[in-house]
Length: 131
Ligand SMILES: [Cu+2]
Image 1 (cartoon, rainbow, N blue to C red):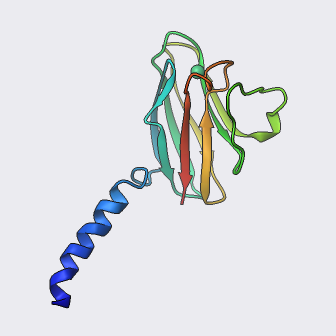
Image 2 (image 1 turned 180 degrees about the vertical axis):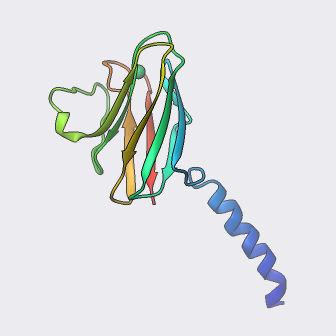
Image 3 (image 1 turned 180 degrees about the horizontal axis):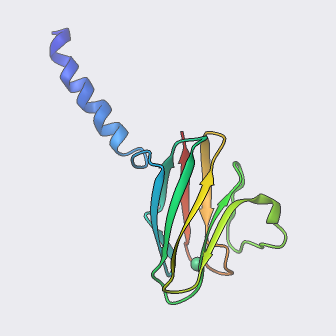
């Protein structure tokens, strides 16, 4: 009876890990549009260089800003007042694409936002998980 439950248990683990925010990857492909990131949850290994392939598919300028661990931005993000809260940023004009690299040293969860005024309030946010 104990052995009969094992495959079921393994299947459960597989299902749970499948919805934990995606596979851990060192290359992120992210599209930006009005007003969201696609995808919006990213899982990366901590302490490794991450390649970010960013595409602005929108009609206006957007940026991909990773805030420091524990910082939670809501509503209108004031860049000038919160410059020290920014861990990484990459900005693209509409229709442009580029490749960037960054490294997250500490495991944990980080908020990702577009810091252009009004965009976070419109829902342009995501979550980065470093493991
Ligand atoms: Cu934006």
